Amino acid sequence: MADDSPSGDDTPDPFKMFGSMGFLGDMMKAMGSQGPLNWDIATQFAGLGALGDSADSQPDPTVRFAYNDLARVADMHVRDVSGLDTNVGGRATEILTTTRSEWARRTLKDFRPLFTDLATSLSQRDVDTDTDGDPMAAMMASLSGLMAPAMVGMTVGGMVGALAQRAFGQYDFPLPRADTSELLLVPSTIENFATDWSLAIDDVRMWVLIHELTSHAVLNTAAVEDGITDLVRRHVSLFKPDSSAVMDALSGLDASSSDALEHIQKVFSDPTLILGAVRSSAQEELAPLLDAHVAAVLAYIDHIVDHASQRVLGSGHTIAEAVRRRRLEAGKDAVFVERLLGLHLTRQQLERGAEFIRGVIERGGEQAPAKLIQKVGNLPTPSELEAPGLWLARLEIQ
Image 1 (cartoon, rainbow, N blue to C red):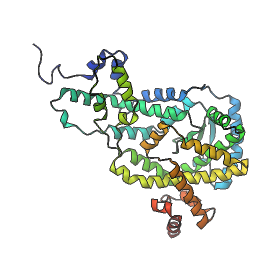
Image 2: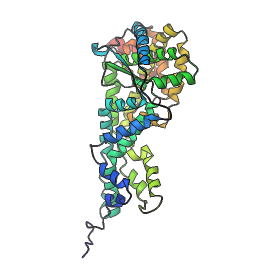
Image 3: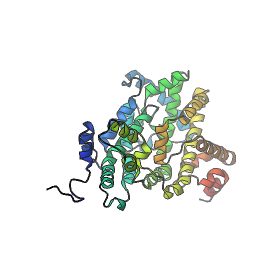
């Protein structure tokens, strides 16, 4: 006799629901592994997303030699202009040339703790008591939880892969990396940019090296670790996920219909829906401080790069303007990653930072911006970003 109770076979099961749909059934069985983020899937999607429409072959060794020759000149000028040591932690910096796919894989590896924190935060879904007595709702809740690690892996991996198609070097992602002895460059992307903008390739290579070495020195300071990296970690831990997002999107799915797969693909192509990422009130409170810190630090990096490249290239401002325009034209994947991490790299933000640095120099002299990273706690508050005199006054008291 069949079991008619709610806990019997009448309760829909996600494995049974998709089991007859070939690869989807197999995919479902692999989705719940590896904790809150499936790293195997993330790595695969990052590599695939980085391929793009052009070749992604290993750079010729002569290209690496050319970058290392230019790096010695770039390093000398960055040190002279900034007063910073580009050998972070006393370790000599090695210039590595690589492919887009390897950039994506390394980025996932270097930021694994951060992405794990993000996935953990997104997995903390409220228990929905409304599913009691509703077998379909219970099944959809189970399905959402089962898919979450793989969906986060697909989304994060795909976005990092998309970022890799545009990255010149490792600090296109403006956070310090785990390995402070290496600088990762993507020659094919740099060369394509030079061609597209009709710029001399050696000039662009030099500008990128100056930017990467400057970023390397600035972002790996204790002040930035405390003022930006720690705030980003706090930001990703404060998400309040919408536990019903995927359930609502899939609730009308008929697994036997001819367009079921198309419907699933459409749902899974929306990162906001898949991750259920809802900005919390705590994140709203944190945002102004993180925005102020990021704006000031990126403007300080740009200030050093402008001065060093002007000394070496004379016309470095042409390359800088092209790069910054390109930065502001980033696609939706870059914008979404920034949103997830709380990094708002908008034109307005960059202009606020530039105005702050100009104000600091006008009131405190050319060396005053260096105080930003000399000590933990020196990065400006939101009010200080708008009034550089307040920031200078605070530092004079310390």
